[in-house]
Length: 453
Picture 1 (tube, rainbow, N blue to C red):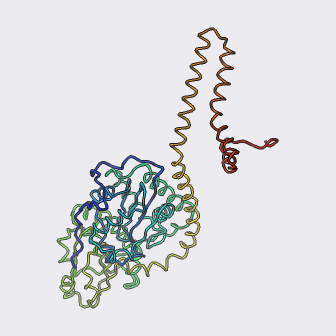
Picture 2 (picture 1 turned 30 degrees about the horizontal axis):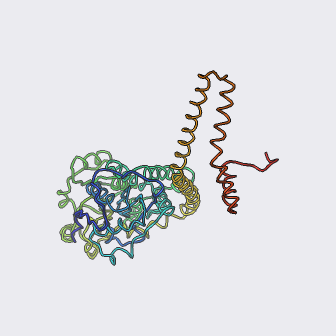
Picture 3 (picture 1 turned 90 degrees about the vertical axis):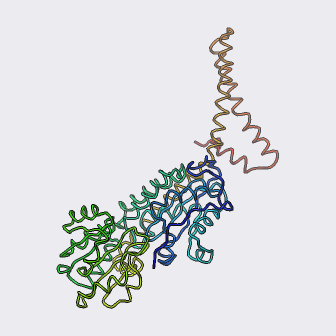
């Protein structure tokens, strides 16, 4: 099966505006700003759909610009990993349906294919979602730290593309801080685990000691490096690193005591490999059924363990039908890793409490943005009044009045002008039986009852 190609970006004007791509977030009116998070992950959608909606790094900038051009979308960021594709949007108004419609059209998905698997979060639920993702609470392996690096990468990409502004910028920074606090203040990271670690543990369950086995690692990224280090620390005899760029393979091989080859050189080495880990960025399968059938001719029924950690998958799924092949994908590993998570689940309760507090804090900050124009206008009015009254006081002095006379004029006039409008509104509230306005005025003007401190 050939993996999905990179979708062509077609801007449908029924759900996108005429904004010119590449101009960055539009000017904000914070009073109308709301947040949206939507997408799919390993819990909500099968691997086949996650493969289909995965957006590779080289396509992210153009996808971000297209998303940011959708109606009501003012800011945008996209996180796309092997286990999730999340889209985060700052909206000027509406529910963000234009963004969701755009995403479906981008991947040529019908509503029937997409709607049953997506999740949609608004407002504080969107804030909680991204904070939980950054903290590893929404990962296949609870508390795994790799997701924080991935979400930082998504943030940097959106920054470079110009689709993140004040709101999402603050949200991402707060999420990074929350993730750090969760790892510092709870035991959620006290026993490091990852998909790579889980796959190595599974290989040990199948083969036992690894000191007589050879591993072939396809790719040279973080996941492969982590898996290779786990294998070496567990006594692996021989390590082969295969990568698209031979230089990358040689670099990692030198660090880990193995040897490096290019991906095109895999065939003659396949029969030597007892353990294979795959995590490349290829959009098509690299290993096929016939590759393993050929490799088995010289192995005398010795089994091969294959951990395909790539999304889209590097190994043709039908390989699993062959005898003496143990093929596991990222979805298959979910059951394996649950045995290592009991202590993390306890720590997760503490983490959720931290996140609840931080969500409340962020929503308070976001709500306070609504008051910014009002506060600015109030201060501008007070400043204008002060300038006018001060100039008149100075004029009195120039015309021969004493400093005391000018100061008395300044104090009395400024007091009268600043208290005039609130006094009129309070009297009107009393005349129209509006006690709630009077109570609000007491709070805003900090008016205490007589005799109180």
